[in-house]
Amino acid sequence: MTDADNLKRQAAAQALEYVRSGMKLGLGTGSTAKHLVDLLALRVNEGLEVVGVPTSEATRAQAESLGVPLGTLDEHPVLDLCIDGADEVGPDLTLIKGGGGALLREKIVASAAKQMIVIADASKKVEVLGTFPLPIEVVDFGVAAIRRGIDRAARNAGCHGLLTLRRRPDGHVFVTDQGHLILDAAYHSITNPQALAAELSNVPGVVEHGLFINLASRVILAGAGGVTVIDRA
Ligand SMILES: O=C(CO)[C@H](O)[C@H](O)COP(=O)(O)O
Image 1 (cartoon, protein in one colour):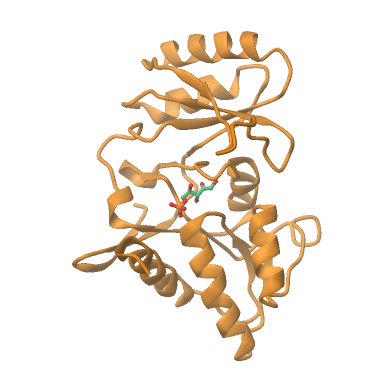
Image 2 (cartoon, rainbow, N blue to C red):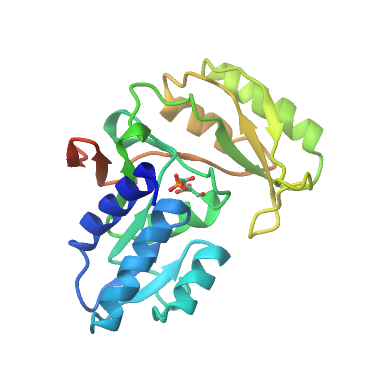
């Protein structure tokens, strides 16, 4: 396991301390969430009783293969806790998410949870969001016009930068679990995430964006110096 992987696993292990039998749990997506599901499965095999609601087909497949009981958000519209990774953690626990392309389901699941715990290695903590390109999920219709709408909206919030259509490693266009496309926005510095989030949400064709505001209640960061838990004020 690499050092970074080891830190991700430490953060995931710490998050499991907050999981109790009987909980309905949102299960995140990505390499850190993958550790969480691995560790959760070990606890389930020891007798922990939970129902997981996965945020992606990848997480569903992993959890299913490990024997974690799963349900849908339609069956469990209120979750006790959601545990997920993040691409950046900014001030007031604002987040950029969607590096793995699951932002839409992740935001729906996090919004349905009474509490969201974010797990990450400490390198994800930033003073200003935006070094990580902001994923913006759009419909597959009129993408050139949607891009212009996004550019206008971003300017209104003091941001500008290149939008890149996300592709898979094999060069094919990346399509989300919900059948949409992702534009990755290289804004570099998002000084007013609330304003940008509001602007982007008003662009026709934008399904969701990767700014998570007022959703994370706790962040668990694992670094060389140990594990730090930060609660939202
Ligand atoms: O938002 C996400 C997926 O859509 C992930 O949580 C985010 O990309 C972090 O991934 P990782 O744990 O692999 O660094």
